Length: 198
Image (cartoon, rainbow, N blue to C red; front, side):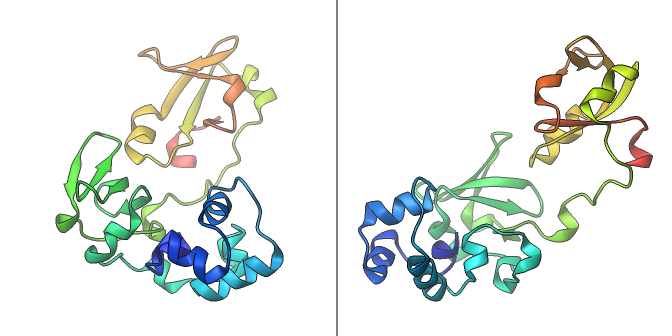
């Protein structure tokens, strides 16, 4: 992401860092770890902190440019990268076809894309819950719980959230949608009260 934000190709970045293209690709794909010296080199080349490259919490660094909309002419540099549209949510950039591809199947021309970000603006993401979710071992103590799905897709969250009945190995809503206990905390959380208390 940092390399693409600087509009540096993989080949050019590998050459500037003095490594092979497959090595840089493995670092970016998290299949191999770079040395400390290489991290420092990348930090300087891309103009980001080492903390950012290591994926440490946002509070540890500040990148004002990451919070600004991506200029439409720069979107092709983000080919095969997820971006956030303030109007439609998350999409993948398809520079070959010149469009954004959304999970809903909607396609939007890069020329028509407005307010597209690398990271969603703070106002676009839900705030923190004010009540604590139930622990997994507490679920069987309830007949019915309010379920909040864990997903970056706002439309999917809206469709699946709601009241679910507790069953033996899963929770199920009135239309038969289920969340299994095995995925509690990874795909969903449960609350004893409704949305006004979350």
